[in-house]
Amino acid sequence: MPLTEITLAPGVGVSRLCIGSLTVSPMQASLPFERAADVLAYAFDRGITFTDTAQYYENYAIIRRALEKCADPSRVRISTKTYAYSKSLAQEAVEQARLELDRDVIDIFMLHEQESYETLRGHMEALDCLFEYKAKGVIKAVGASMHHVAAVRGVKTLAERGFRLDVIHPIFNKAGIGIADGDVSEMAAAIKEVHDLGIGVFGMKSLAGGHLYSSAAEAFDFVLDSGFVDAVAVGMQSEEEIDANISYFETRSFPEAASEALAKKTRRLLIEDYCEGCGSCVARCAQSALRLEDGRATVDPDRCVLCAYCSKVCPMFAIKVI
Image 1 (cartoon, helix red, strand yellow):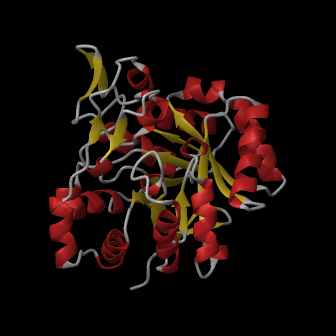
Image 2: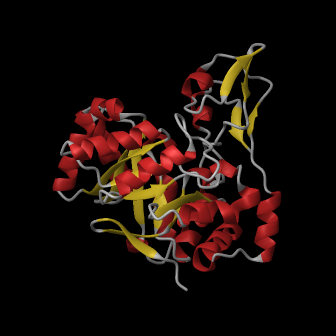
């Protein structure tokens, strides 16, 4: 059975399995540049035609190199995100993506980490700009990513008031890990309501940043069988992970060796002893997983989704995902 392709938004056909690009990049695994590009190129050549990135990740060059290495870059659809809130910042974000990815057209451009209807309204100038680019054919679809149930509900409210996004990218997993303001049932209900409006959904953190590796099959089934998640972004760092996840999305089974490897795999946020306790990471963490204790940062592993966004704001480079 071939890797399923779906229409996520008008004019945007993608594989149902999306490779998240953050995990090979400097904020996480920090693979050597060519090695990171090789992993992404392998995914593209294996039939994953969808990748997710963000301006914040600073990895456009890796994706561009991967596209140069793969057999048919024209098949690959790219979704990116920006924290822009003004027209000028949105313009800068779009032009940066076009230049650094070497693409005239960006398939999906989203607002990054929206929290509520009020947050979406506060970014309306940027949203208007993205839709202007869409009208010119420079962007194919406009959307928003979120860890908050309130933001999904905000997308519905916008649509009811005549401003309809094309795509959302919400956190969604069976354990509800990473949801900032509710539980998994509340998130599911909100996503379904948005999906019922005809807005495309591609989920993030289906394995909860690695917390659900030991029950990966059940975690994937929970999302894939929901009926309202069109595609799923999964971070992968090796050809073996790519093959295993493609196998599951094709056949609903992992090769035996892959199942054993996933069950044993663990990831964690490491905070080095030379942390100076400045608190920048605590302020940045959207999951409230970090706190200062005895003059240095410490992490609550049950709340951390291993996004590594905190690592970027650490002035001592004391934080990494391992």
